[in-house]
Image 1 (cartoon, one colour):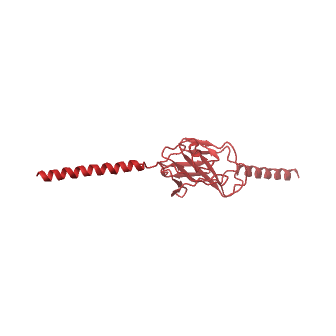
Image 2 (cartoon, rainbow, N blue to C red):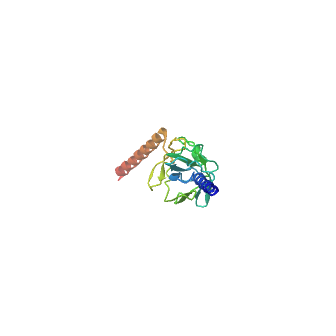
Image 3 (cartoon, rainbow, N blue to C red):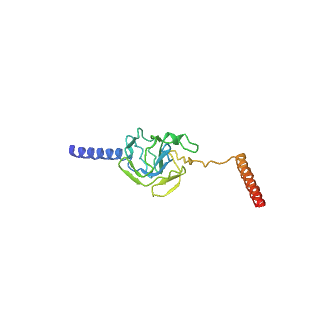
Length: 196
């Protein structure tokens, strides 16, 4: 009888240990974004499964950089949810949703590299768009960024460098200057023809 109880206790212990360690391993990196300077970056993870709230103390790594999740998610209802890890520069932008975790600027290289989540999901990625609008998706394509946090809030940021434009009066002055220059050149040509 004692050996039967010991066996059942061992099996129960293994089941508890397995379920406790299974709370983080089904997240996949789905989208990364960076501006040209790396001051605005985000990494988005997704899981289709419940009971994946145990992110702490696991890590995200890229190159020589490591980010440690210091807390777990607030609920085990994680099926079809995202986790957003972003830089402070991201959080300050219009259209940005609140990130779930904050990582340092220039966390990953825009020239290509890898994102390693907890050793269970490693994405070797190519060049990241740095036009301030597009992000790199897991399938290797780029599209308009769509950062989504754990609260299911999705945003869109635009950090594209604006093309300098002339104000209306500046444009009028430029056109006027061109007309004055052109009329002066025409008068000179007419005078040269008349004296020839």
